[in-house]
Amino acid sequence: MKKYSLKLVLMIAENLKNVQDRIAAVDKNQQVILIAVSKTKLASDLQQAIDAGQRHFGENYLQEALDKIEALKNQNLIWHFIGPIQSNKTKQIAENFSWVHSVDRLKIAKRLNDQRPESMQKLNVLLQVNIDDEPTKSGVKVDEIDELVTHFENFQNISLRGFMCIPNPVNSEQSFNKMAKIMQKYPNLDTLSMGMSSDLELAIKNGATFVRIGSDIFGKRA
Ligand SMILES: *Cc1c(COP(=O)(O)O)cnc(C)c1O
Image 1 (tube, rainbow, N blue to C red):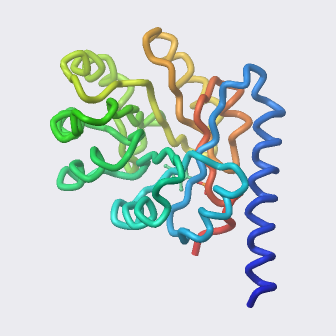
Image 2 (cartoon, protein in one colour):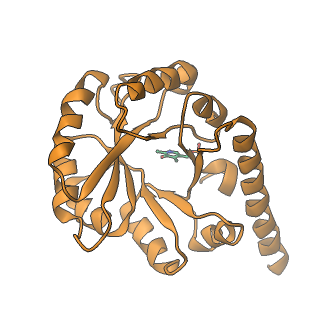
């Protein structure tokens, strides 16, 4: 039993180092922040990554995330909500996260703004863009972005920082490039969340500032 867990400890730390090296090889401006995507993984797995220096974590499912936030509190971690958002979940998201990557409609933005405690720093928000216009994926359509962005001027407790996308893997390079061009139209925004285990290099070459890496750090999910 001891042997097994020691192996696991080493594996997560080693995987993390490999991902950091892959990022460093293409991140010429040293602007990329690595988010360890820890959905379905145990708090003890996250602790291994924390002990190896990891600070940013991404979670998709609220209840699971809240359990880990509680289990790992007082360690100066930065939590990112990256999963689909139902409107009855916005309050707990607003109260427990620093970043939300998956805002895809005005109603959700408005609720997050109303429910973000004023005692906390502004909640950082990204609009999820359905960059390949895929019917099965959530996200704002490209031609809806402009309209939605204008509404954020009215929000006091949330700050629109940029965009997130999950392209179709068959054409991720073109989609990242498309996202980069959209980003250029908004000089006030500074954050682009794109790139996963299989395509982080392509995302960084196209201006990603957050990459979201799960399986290459924690191993395959069940
Ligand atoms: C699961 C997930 C990731 C991580 O994907 P991997 O292929 O395991 O690196 C990144 N972003 C989102 C939105 C996810 O749901």
